[in-house]
Length: 293
Image 1 (cartoon, rainbow, N blue to C red):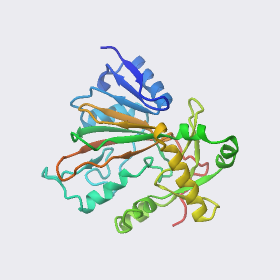
Image 2 (cartoon, one colour):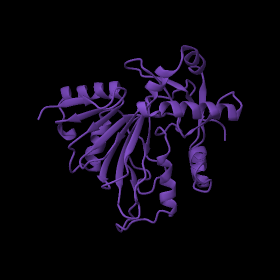
Image 3 (cartoon, rainbow, N blue to C red):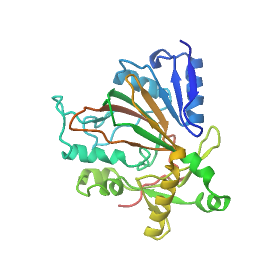
Image 4 (cartoon, helix red, strand yellow):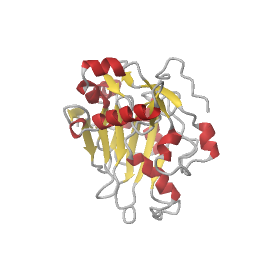
């Protein structure tokens, strides 16, 4: 079966079939890389039996991999972030357990690693165990949001800098979730509010749950703008909802889309997802310096 790439919506997403990520030719990889830059989200079907080594090797073809932060249970200090409601013995973790409350932050619209000095380029998520209902992943186009702004709004917003802070976003759930170690490891950082794709020049609104406020603006005024822009990015016509199938590997452009996981019946169904994250090539803001604590 030959490589096939089919658009999923008018504004983002394409389905990729007819490949094995472990045996890609250079021509196949080039086609996938172009489709990624153009469509922001790729749903790569048929990757049955994928393991961490195979996923990491494919991810590295797009760039260096991030190391997971210490607060990620099961994957600390590795290139694999694990999101699971199973404990090491294979039992369902109660929904009120702190581990599940922490991971519920992934159900807010966000972009991966925007709280790091060098924000992520791409993420790749494989569904190792997927529930028969619920647990979808939604994606929303920052490019479509940029195109929906007036020229006056574009001129006003493009120079702005947003402060991104993991402590802020997780604090929206429970301020006690993070430790002193987390606070030292994850200082707030500055990111452009509008990002430009270096390959095709497409611009995208860069907001989401980790964006705390706008630099130089009164806090509430900045947060009001960030809420408005996140609402704009996540309009239904700007979204794609992925319903997981066995063998799916989904990759997305963190520079151009927001995403979130949808809830499922955690008391009934296991859900185990493994993510690799491709680091960006540099900070979005020229000085790239974290803010003082």
